[in-house]
Length: 325
Length: 236
Figure 1 (cartoon, each protein chain N blue to C red):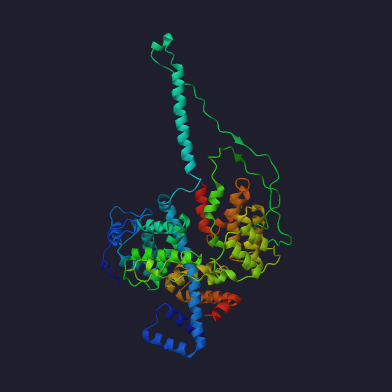
Figure 2: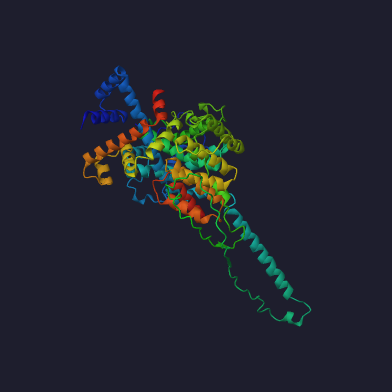
């Protein structure tokens, strides 16, 4: 083990509180005497904070797993808006209507003037034909794919996708109550904090003046104003990607879903982390709003996230998948 | 040492925030069976001391202890209710509940929890503190002073990862590769080099140690090449 490694281990043990008292004192004295060494210890401390993100991510994943196992989350919170509750009411209304119709039908059959009325009532059940569910296949219209931005360099799965049109998924005929409220679901899963730092933090004010102004507007909920301050940036450096991300988020919020998908797709194609993974999640949520028409692409984006357990949004995607079942 | 003494001035039972006794009852109640099954848990008597020791031991003991806390009846409801009554949404409440466990885990591992209050009370206090912090960041809720938290609880302030660093760290961690991430996570959780070697299938602890050092240096390198990190370091 060389000196650098020894020094590294010594500082680590100090920060973990594992250095013997005498050695810890000696290290503190060294820090007091040598500002460079003190800065190195500080840097170690900061790096350890960064590594806590790995622990945090792992624990958050475990919590979601526990929730799935126990379903406590579902029991302790209200059912999600518009996804489950309306179905119950429709079932209840249907049951009441059925009973009312049945009663009416029986009364119709009962004619006091008829000599048959004295006879015991038998075989009054109507013949009920089983209802055959119908499936409507959508016409093979050309799929609406968002055009990639000019100059797009295909580097990811999305950029390398086969450009041939996708077969539209068959759309089962269903009533409004059968279809999940995709927009509400997307709304439930969209967290501003997943994409942007909280308002007022230094990290959020790291871009150009225009970006910072747009960010302020976005965080104030003025999405159209944010959009007006952002212009598509052709570069692929961090600033350009950050700007494109905010643009995509603003488009998402103003329901310009096709444009949002195009911008998220560009960011995902850049492969620059963590933006690329965030963009994949953003794209999934945007496509969720466009369900069921965008189902094929939505499925592909979700599969990409779910195939990578290290993905920043793996657990959230799993949770979304569960909710869609 | 962890003391489980009752507070000097016991409060009447509050359905919103169950007392320690209520929590403790829940914790050791024969009726309480963790749905994901605590059947494999060697330790069925989960006192605060056992939970703390479990978290500090790391590995599966930590996971079991954290799971026990996470699923403790009443705890989630207390946090949810506080957040909902103070301007938050259901999702905010769930986020705060989960963040509180992350912070509790960190504080306990780093020895910052001194055991002067009950673990469950401390948990709720962290959640309240975190919610106040978030509301302040959002420019709301500025009238709530720390006195709003339970006065008898030891300081619930938990060290969150500063937002301005979070982005930088995530960027660097995104580039070090899956194996390095896994290794550094185990290292951060204080697993021994022998355990790391066994889990990661290195031939021995020395090789694991070398790899941990290499990964850590890679992480440092990536951070140092980021100008934003350099300027943050200067401002420390």
